[in-house]
Length: 277
Picture 1 (cartoon, rainbow, N blue to C red):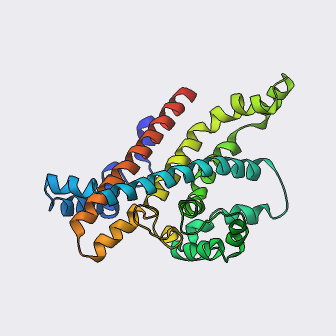
Picture 2: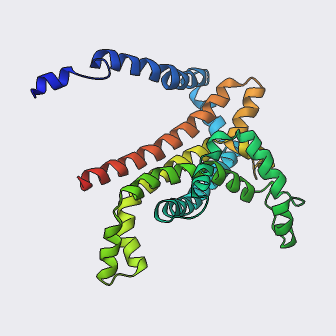
Picture 3: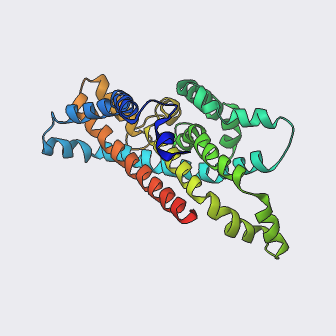
């Protein structure tokens, strides 16, 4: 069939209309809210902006958010790959139920998750009481913050790695085993190169989600300034005091950090896709 005719027959309307609708929706959902952050931040002078960003309490909140988000993303990277592997490679009872539970953090209101996690991990809770006997506190510590971030971030890794594993032919692993490769070598040389871009993308998404998380973290964090206060809570405190410009300045820094991480992950994924093709 003529290529010109194929180009004319499209299920979705022509490029002009489709592009116009896309830009309009992108502007309403993403660009306008982002522009509003810059607009409110513009009320601050350069000196005031840096004074807000480099304030001791702000830097401490950034440190808590970034450290806990990174550690939680690392945990999600390992556990997410393992969960995806189990769901793809094995058959077992209630597999569909387990697969559906992965989506629970997406559907469950984050405030409910935070309250539930806090009640479980306080020193009188089911989980917290066990660790309390060992002298380990979970709730109202960075440990608790990481647990909450792991909860909300695990679906991102599982759902990015799972489709790649489903497309990965098991015969490659069998061939490696027949050639004498052990399980470790097979994973490192055969499986890992295939899932690495997806796993890194999931890591970046989990990190960005944890960095901006509020509802599930604010209850379990304890919110102690310089110790367990997260940047999202600091922004909320500024909003409650009607200091929108300072809140926008802190939000802008978090936005830049998340954007850089996601951009790097996308570059890695694009390069891997080009090498594969």
